[in-house]
Image 1: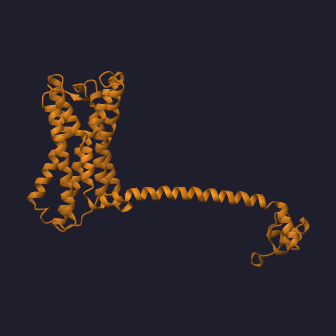
Image 2: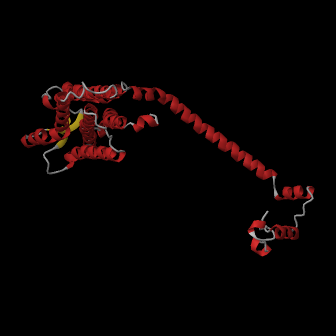
Length: 329
């Protein structure tokens, strides 16, 4: 996008909201291709492949709701300031990036729980299709529903729910300005996309008994479409849509500038090479002779002494000539 789009901190946060979904779907393309093309290296045969898939899936599962909660917090602050005629101070770039880094680090930490030996939390291939942390005994079930599920999903959803209730009670949306209200509606659509895709997916993957592998397949496939849905929903924001339309033209212009720079550099190099071949020292001497100038070492020395400048041949300095700096020509 353009620099004006990137300067809007809401657009930057939206990008970080969508990015985990993209990573999740992008990595799944490779793992699914390996499972189909090289069964001996699939998640059912190689343990580290199963662990790897579980890690990037849980990173996407965790980062998406937490980033939505952070975006909801900033939207709530904007509506609150707008409602009570308070100046809204957006977060500084440093604070915003630190918050995003903390949330991403938390998502990675939660995803790595399957690698901690003493936790009743392991990644397994559900119906042989995809690796996720799954229940395997009573201890793992308690840990899954009392610790893991709140940390990756329930806490940020509950936070979003509380913000929505408070905004409704205080009438923040009804009193919002013409600029703040579209942003609030846009955020509601983003959250709606998250709920529409992830609630059915989690239900099919973890709540419904896996008696039929097609149920697990439907839940996993539906979750993969969340990244596409969020990206398409982001295009409903006018400034992002305009930047997306201009992106192909900007890419073409960038490539043309690079080609033009290479051409100019090549032309400059050729001109420099041609000039160096056509102006040797003998040519300089010939031009001096034609102009009636004596370029002998003695003459050069005399000229330098007369004008008080340093000569490359005579080596006379200004101090040696005895002239003051004001007499320099």
